Image (cartoon, rainbow over all chains, first blue to last red; front, side, top):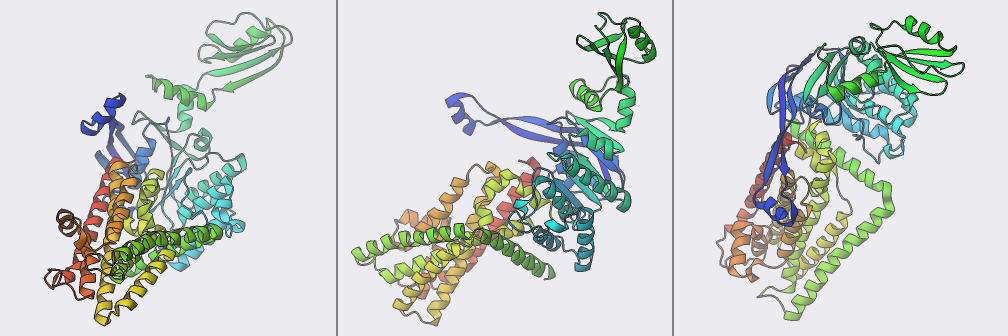
Length: 328
Length: 269
């Protein structure tokens, strides 16, 4: 479905001269720096995949998505989506994709929701019968029937996002791009949207590329994740795999009946210490959990304890900060 | 042909949506339409008193000046209303609406044109037609004269469409920072056209005839309507060039916009 090889995008960013005289010089002697937003990305996404696209702000995610959707022309590299070159064959390309921007609406703000769907049907030249079936199906799945006659500006964010998804799918695209579709939504609204997306992918074979900062979206929906940083793919695989290779570290929280012990065994780190509580981190390959617990119990009676895996956010934050460790 | 009809169909539907959107705010609409119609009075009355005080302008009577004014104002107000999407293009570029237009399988120019019809401008069109109607009645224009007036209005519509599209095209290079430049072009142009080109100094007359071909918008068709082409020292075929020149300017503007769009696609915002 998507083939990307050594894709690059460079921007020319004006570099301003400073001061009052500088403002004049900017006019006559413009200088600019070349910024490489996307620096040689390669990947392949097969039809029917559900792929998460993550990375810190400014990593090159949205530039990549803009190239994939045909809005931006790549500086170099090869790019094909469903066999088409997005920029060169823009009209044919965009007729087959759906795009949702979480932060921007594509609905007609002052008109009832249903009118946006009617207009989009004409924009995409969808056959009336096909349109009616697709609309009814989406209205049903996204539970937006009661909202159809409401002007878009009066919808809550969660309601609007559901209507927005339906709008992006009016023309039955087989590939959809979602940019932060769950941003700012409450738990229930997030769940509705995730359930819907999972079903579209599973039952209709729709290929989905989801950009998000919310790792629970990825955990819930994406068997595969592309992690982008500094314009490059730094990781391509399952989120679970990252957890297995990097998230071995365990966290142990112990509440004591009485004062917590002053020291801990070798190779164990103290994350937090209170009068009756210790939060410890350790690598189970070097320190066995039961040995650690036995050691602690011998020093003070234990009232309660919790053993946790490293939260995935923490692992990814570490990758953002330090890159992927060499042992990978 | 089918694609032209389909584009026209979409244009009508999208314009319809923009009109229905504006009707959501009736009071706001009424106030602004009223304000806009005052502009015409404010524009035309000083002109009226000026020309009356001098008893005409270099052989142009009050009614003839009103004819020039009515022609320009009719086409300009129509285009300002109909192509509001281009007028507001700078902010749209900044907001990222252009990305959305690129994501839809239709021409970008069509979508921008169909984006918004500022219906309050119809108030100005009506006032311009009123001034024009009075001028035509006073001048007792015959059918041939009326045909030339219509030609002038049609050419003016093409010309102002070109100006507005060209103004929008500049926004691709300045990333929406020069909306004022655009206003200067459009409002400056329509103001200069209120007077017969013949009253200007030679250098300015040359600019508006051969450089920015403003003279073709209303001056030459008005000369033809008044049967004064020869008297003004122009060959008889010159008024016939009017619609052709205006169409040429529009095609050039469209090319500039397409070029800007290509630039946008390679640089982003």
